[in-house]
Length: 323
Length: 306
Image (tube, rainbow over all chains, first blue to last red; front, side, top):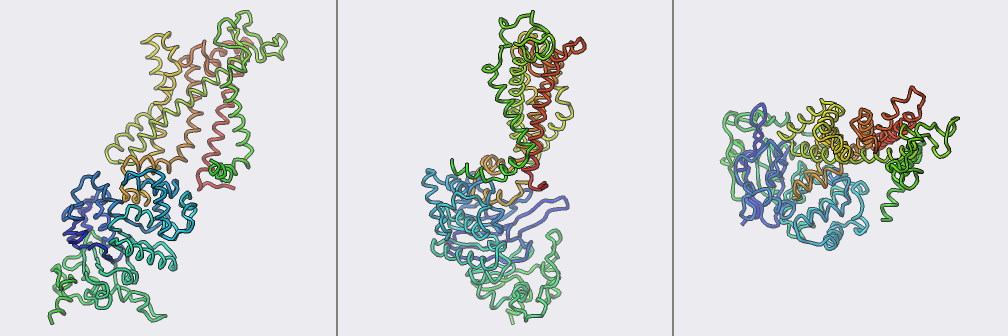
């Protein structure tokens, strides 16, 4: 049985100009210990999906359909108090910018102890001991001294380690990492990613990695989802997606990687930009930017086709499959 | 403890304090005024609240350096024969007390309402802020005059004189809460959008904890700045009300009522009764305002001047 199962999730934002659908018909599942990547450009709905899982969509947005089943419980229907027991306890989240995610006026120890005491009956001394232990587990040198420091006294990579330590404090079964390395130096990025990978493997934690970096996804995750304009366009084993992408959008993302370009040549960008969620094109949302677009793409939303462990929503890919 | 001490010793706050002569002087003056006024019973030569120590025959004695001066009364006496210096010390104590407690009340009300308005937003926000707008469209003095005059008229001067200090604290405290509420709300709106708030929501903390433990400490610097200015304002409001006869009673005078009591004699030669308390009041308000200005410069990193 999957640990986390998202079924037909739909998120809407009622705005003055009309209702904006940020997520439509998003379904996926996550097994215990599995690592899943969610890939897409900015605005594809990756972060909205993460917040929807935690039932933390900011007003005026709301979950308008579907369910998020975590260990059989529908998180979308829980009361705020019940939800708080899951958040940060069973499901943790890591944000993009470690400069911004720690409260500047509290020491990191205070913030860690607070998190523990929100979820456990634990004495301050025991909480402190556990916090130091977790700081050590994310390879922070001299955690006994670091724990009394303020966030501004730490470097960016160090802070992201602290953020990861906070996420691990309560031994969650799922960690959602929303672009965890985007704000860091390239060298630190690799370190943090390796650390995250090792921690997930050793503690048997499932990971949902949200990123626009296909390179990172291919290193860390076993399965990947590609999102476009609030919808999943392709899902499958990461290796399969990288080596043998079916959707033209995924192909475009792979070709846009700088490694795929001969030096001196311009990057192979996907022409155009992601449509505004206010007016998503009829038919396949990607058709105005797609080099394989056909007549049917303009008027008919593609349905999912594929096999047991992968699926793709594309008329062109479905046609090739049949041949 | 020693850790906080070393932190304080190494702080930019202390560094900038020690480099600014105006601030050192203002701070020392304020400290001196507060210390001597609160130790008034110990250092004042007379007790102005004790009728047995007051002799009407000593009334209107000029300061000691004038021809008719009396060595016992350094700054002279008022129309009732009270020693000016002692009365001023006691009066400053009352003025400072009213200023501090009125600001405490303002800040408790204003911070709670501003925090709620900023954090919850929506209808509560609109309601509280319109309430603040309405309240700010009446001047503090006008509200205070109306309330205090009605109280005096309905419960009699006797009871009023007993409760004057509480009434002044209440009136000045309640009339000025919108200053705090607006400032706090503005900072909360800015802080609320920051990612650390999302992060603690994801950690699963309750709303009350997020509001008071995470957002409130981040709005402290504007609160500190307006607090100093508000103390000066509250002292001035109290003085103005007392001057108008609605503040502290004559037998328990604050600086404002002292200025008022001497005002009628100022043209008949007894200039000292009004002048000395007035100078003290000006000095008190001035040093607090100078400190407030300095604090605003220091706590607002966008304003680094030197």
